[in-house]
Image 1 (tube, protein in one colour):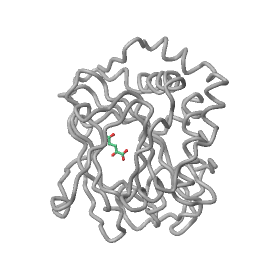
Image 2 (cartoon, rainbow, N blue to C red):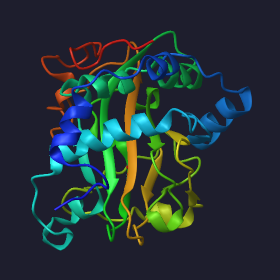
Image 3 (cartoon, helix red, strand yellow):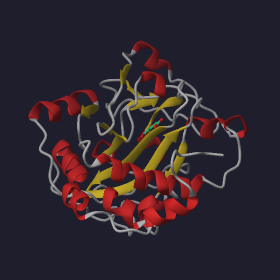
Length: 284
Ligand SMILES: O=C(O)CCC(=O)C(=O)O
């Protein structure tokens, strides 16, 4: 049974049924400029850390909204961590929250975040791919190393990017992300079945592995190609992160892999179509 400090189902519903404050709404839609060095770092290494994507003044409201949504999605699950599948022991995964909770939609649709990806991808327009809160429970196991694009039917995976926003401080011992720099190479592909039967791709043993601890409000952005994972949560507190995944406008649907071709975000598309569904609106 998951517990989030200070939240009950009733208070969570009140939060989710309330309007986001006008100051946070304004903040979420202000563009945050990033530097050429940050853009170059992202292209070179396949990820970049950006500090203070959400400043302390604005974070508590965002954090409470995401926590409330997670509690409503997962609060009825009575199982202990040990009773869960190996995959579920890596994180509580709550996807497509923005379509159920208007307050979460304000966060997921924020131009502040999409604008960073627009700059990183040097794109004209950015679409939403999907969102997911990823909370790692106290005692939660590692997140096995993988490449996100394995699970996504996108023909141009170099134009997909995940924002992983820390809602709490995430030091190494709480299960921060680790990345394998420079694995954002279209020639490096290996499907890791993190859901049922994870393995460690052999070539990763030769690669550098970089842990990226974050302070609350910091975020990392990683390419859909970049191999990454996360450590265990050795603390007694929940590791709380919100992710939003973006694609460059114009990327196309690739239905050639049976394992991912029924992805919700591509509903109704035919092979080769531009990804433009009700789940993938233009954000900026
Ligand atoms: O949060 C985690 O433990 C893993 C996150 C991840 O793999 C991702 O956001 O792509």
